Length: 389
Ligand code: T4K
Image (cartoon, rainbow, N blue to C red):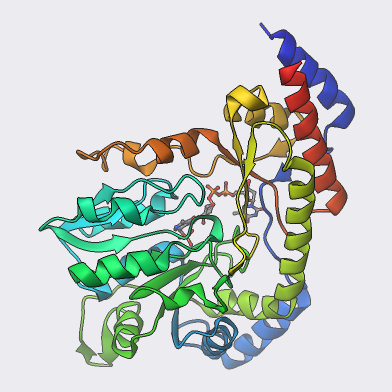
């Protein structure tokens, strides 16, 4: 049986429902003929993978674009992260990380027989709180694995100080942080290694894909070796590598996208501005800050829903928006700490738990019409008013 509120939402939706689903994101697709043009050259060369010309060109372009010394392309971000752990010879111990992330961050630890030790997040940035890290460091701690959640840089200086003091390596999950700059420099310059994801849902995509970035030439050599079975020559294998290579079709999609990246960011900035204008004063909604020393990539638009003040919970808003054909996402619910293979004697994670139950990511992508963002913002305000009436 429907509640009166559900009935009112349905009546509202009958008048304002989008004719097609509005997804949380859509891939940033370049003109198809740019991709096929590059593929034609690959066909001509009859070279599809294993350090092909397009792969090499994309690596060079990204090194230049992101202003990083060394970057190694991968078939996806998860395998890149798995390879980062192997490159640092991490095994059989504990890694301090966050539970407020996509499952991949934590699942790779399991594959290396590493146990996640969850540290709570900062309530405003959703990133690992450095103030909680030191208390979790023990004799079995092997590394720190923070995530630049939604592309917001972690407190890299504080994390670096703690890591240096305890002699621990830091691997950043920078899956969301393509192109993000902190104090005028790439955020990928911090830690021993940073992992990027180029999944279809990311601001820069190769359909599936990813990369490892490092400042250390020897670590770069190891990541390149490990993603190609550890092979150093026709008859020599130096390390137990796996197949993490990006192929020429993926690289073509990446290369074809480079010319449109700035326009994509500009459009996202504009959509971000529309949401902020419409929602910043809405009671009970908390928007993610854009710090003045950060150049963001506008990859996500997370909104925190405080039920008491907004009038309805995040889950109710999520369901109500579905009635309008608006497909938001609860990134990141459930917390990784609730997975059976992760359950440990972890301390309380009040900020992570609150974020997992209150944050909703709104649609944002380069081809989202501005008028749609206006409508989405207006619908959210109307729903709030209805709930509080
Ligand atoms: N670390 C972090 C912090 C991550 O967020 C991720 C990935 C990783 C590590 C691992 O990196 P990869 O191994 O994936 O490179 C999506 C992505 O699959 C995942 O890559 C991403 N994070 C995560 C945040 O989002 P889902 O389960 O939400 O995907 P899906 O298929 O439901 O897509 C979401 C929406 O995107 C769809 O409703 C419609 C749209 N979409 C999706 C695809 C695949 C399209 O319009 N076209 C498409 O081709 O996880």
